[in-house]
Length: 360
Image 1 (cartoon, helix red, strand yellow):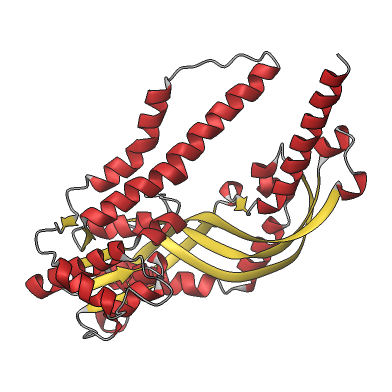
Image 2 (tube, rainbow, N blue to C red):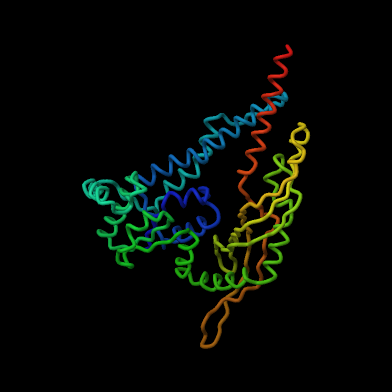
């Protein structure tokens, strides 16, 4: 049994999407009994706090904002769910994750606060001169180390917090293994399932093929892939595509079939217009802009394969075909560069209001 501890920052970076991508692949190993996640009271409390801030409050505010905007135009909203019911629906993914019976829980009974205070006084990890308020991490570190000392299980730790990881770096490599991302962890876990070893080799070769890179380039240039921005800006063209990283997750495997996603990250030049700004009479010369932005996207795929016998009756996998679902490929980009646009809208609305009231 492989025991895995995932730091909070990894959950945030994966947007708490437990049923897709690298999390979905990890749960494949958990459900098969190969892996158990190690949870502590501190990790659970942090997850609940950040999930509430990042997911629940964000979406509830979006719903409230939509309702206010529609009300201005006398557009009714058909409420099929109450506010509490919506909040309950948003809480379900995290609750299902936390209540999974296959997780391993480590409580606080073995915690020695004096050891934590000693690390704090001596600037031992996770405490450093620049990061003094790391008591939550210190508790997790001590509980992980105590779990290992009592069970002798190797603990696989996923996270990119340098001061947190430093607390384990001088330990026996067979005690703790460090990974920066879930994808890095999953690569290590794939040999637990025989078929995945062959499929991983095939996919590693596939994402390097010229044909795949050409299809990817064509799809990144397709402005319809940026539909999440519709209503905010109008994408005119995509230029200077730079693919920085391509990885994949194998999310489901059954006899002869494999599902998953190819993850791509990189940078593009986004040429766009701001039609609302033009209609409001704002600065026209700024209506058409070009921004260099990072992007990420997931391409779902399906592989069909069969088992064959080679020399010496050694079994191997022969891939029949791979189907990429480009229609489901949506590109996500940060929208920070649009904040100045919203500021102008707000300023313009305020000036209109002031002009109107002053003439009354």
